[in-house]
Structures are given as C-alpha cells and as structure tokens.
Image 1 (cartoon, helix red, strand yellow):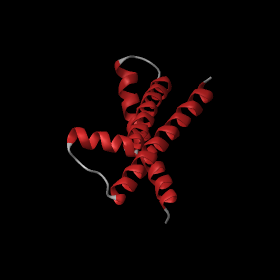
Image 2: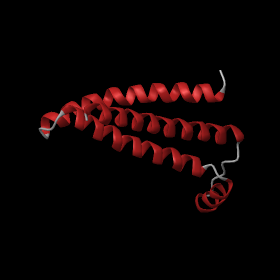
Image 3: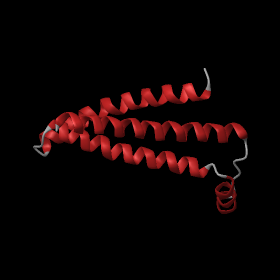
Image 4: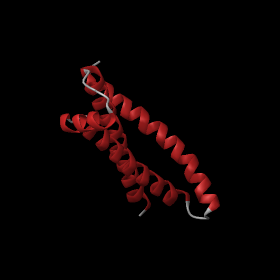
Length: 114
C-alpha cells in the first residue's frame, strides 16, 4: 500500500474514532448545558476540526528546512534523517485530513438540521 493510501486510510480511521468520542462528549454537553444534541455535536466537531487542521499545518511547517535549522540552533537537536521527515509529513497530512473530514461532517450535520 502506498503512502497516500496509508494516509487516507489512517485519516478515515482517525475521523471515525474522533466522531465516536464526539458523540459521547456531545451527549454530556447536551445534558449539562441543556442544549440540543445535534447543535452540540456540530460545535464539538467544528472546534476539533479547526484544532486538527492547525496541528497538521504546524507539523508540516516544522518539516521545512529553514524551520529545522532555526529549531536545531535553538534546541541543539538535529532532525535530518529522511525517514523522520517522511514520518512527520505523513503525520501532518493525516491530522490535516482528519480535520477536513470532521469539518465536512459538521457541515453535513448543519445542512441536515436546517
């Protein structure tokens, strides 16, 4: 299986796991704050999608050569191994794709409840 296929499969699995956790969190929020379950689920998914996309972007940015040099100077570490950089890029893509999938789920939820 190629890198793109592994990233896509990991993103789908991650989105499924996060959605299952979101359903529980939304149930608790609906009871505690006395709001509807679907609006709470949509809000939780939207906030998580923004966070995951930001995390994916930060990981992707951390792999850039200039950022690695500055980080190496400040922390006295060196990340020059190609496998580490590829692993970082794969994680960045997975987090960003999970964020996009959660955003699309919250968009579909908003459209279905209107």
